[in-house]
Length: 540
Image 1 (tube, one colour):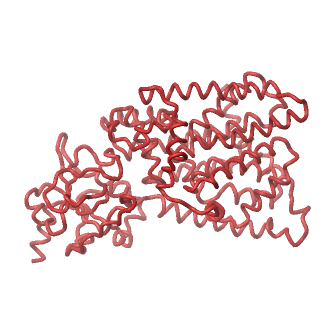
Image 2: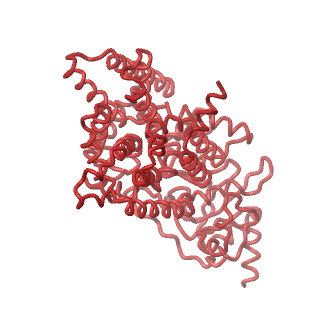
Image 3: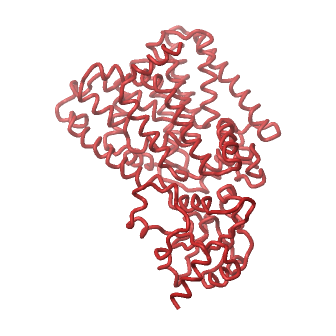
């Protein structure tokens, strides 16, 4: 059995291992979230289960009972293992474990990805133009860092890959009863990962049902069993959510009530109906991407399986167009369905059948140009875009040296950890409250974060010379919605950010981040209060 599995992986194209390597590098470089929902909907919920995050401090989705527990429960063993290895909870260590765990999941999915997208078949075919276009789509600059994140979209994407693989027509014409039931259960899992996946799954199943009703005037046993599997999966999911919330809960109805009926989602921003059109071009760095998808759906319409995918894609996309609150990450679960359409379309070499004036949209030279553009953006984005500056600061706070059981005070006038109300304008104050993010796990337990305005830095350090001082050139980018950001008061210590080398190493910074030009760009510095007082004495 082991030799059979090993042989399967040895037969995989090298390009898949290159792609997996990009995922691994992205997981190592990522520092911080792409969107706060990764914290509020996944990490915080899981931490509540392991006793790190108090339930009363969970984000608003928790009291509304509108989020599924399925994905947070999936990461609980990873978080518990990280906590056990260190003997305490460290957000950055466990977050890295979660990212690497997702890379491992993609490793297990490589053979399925190969068969679903017909990658080996395309390589064996040897058509250079087809391979260039496939590489352009598969190596989109944003994919490696997005598919490894612990988000509902990324996990939902993995589940939809399994859902589509099991129904591949080349596997078998009809599913065995057990397989059909499994497909239904997987469809339900995709729904519980991200409720919006229901649009794709429903569109796929309904398209298949219409085909069967037209051809045989009845639904096949497989379709009935898939529907039964979905129902069973919904019941199981309701049980998981009810156990998570401690009371009977139908989270998808609560989600619909809050975000659609009460329109809470619009509170977080509204976008125009054209938002996804230009954003999809931006994240693919390919002006022809949408044209390709639309033409692929048209060209493959007569093939039942791909018609089902097209209907599911269209239903998913139209549903998101109608919702005022739009974010490009919402499109991530449709990556595999879209790639399946495109790769199947490229197999037909459509450029050979088109009028010469339209062939340029599939031209190999254009494909190489946009592929090179994606690779260049990927390199730059990986080097500079995956490391959130605020999270670099938070990671360094975890690295402050301290003795066992010691509490270290950290003074700052920056609201980088939260939003300060007016009563926090003067030193001394207690540990700051969170008024924007309910994520106390981002501050280590041994740190007492204390607000001090810039004029009080010397006074604060004199009172506690063992404390540390956070000098910052910026506030948090996250402020209360509807309220203006609070500008930092200009203080006379800006030069001290560059003047003081840290008393400890920023262990998470990579070698190119240690260069002098980067240190000049660093927007914060953590220094020892004793060093700060010595600096003031020397300056005076």
